[in-house]
Amino acid sequence: MHLPHHIVLVGPMGAGKTTLGQALAARLGSAFVDVDARIEADAAQSIPALFATEGEAGFRCRESDALRAVLAGAPAVVATGGGAVLDAGNRAAMRAAGTVVYLTVDPVIQLARLGGDTGRPLLQTADPAGTLAALQAQREPLYRDAAHLVFDAGTLAPDAAARVLADRLASLETRPA
Image (cartoon, rainbow, N blue to C red; front, side, top):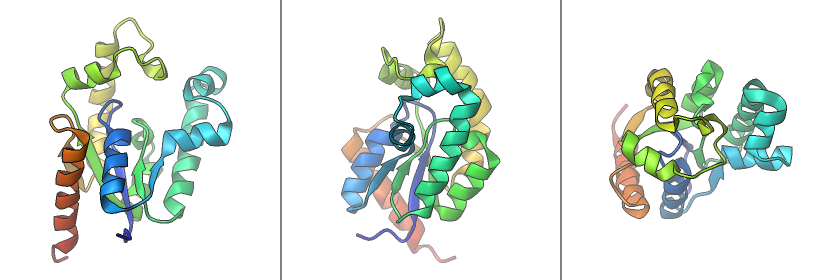
């Protein structure tokens, strides 16, 4: 299937943007692009290394550049970083380029998925659960502002979630404007 536009996945870390995104792209016969992976490839550094050398502000500039480059390309299923919505320009670009899906996840499931992950600079704190809660409180309105569709990504296995999400997206496409 040729996508008519991008399907952009937003949501907190651990919501399944990459895992579900890959399954959704496979189900739709579409390309999949992970913006964080693109940033790492372009910089030839890991995200933790970029945070260490450039700080969060430097990383966010790279994130905006990479997101815009991806959105200028052929339609794909796009997984964004959890903080991509912090920039109003990013939110507008995502909405203009396609359908934005906010993947929600229960905090308990989110924390279990992220347990032991050392590649998340913002989680390298004494209280990861508290950090996740604070990030969610800050970003929730931004995820909702960007989204055309809200989808619970915490209750189904990736392939089942991809099937349900593909059906929901198809129903959006067939609605009269």
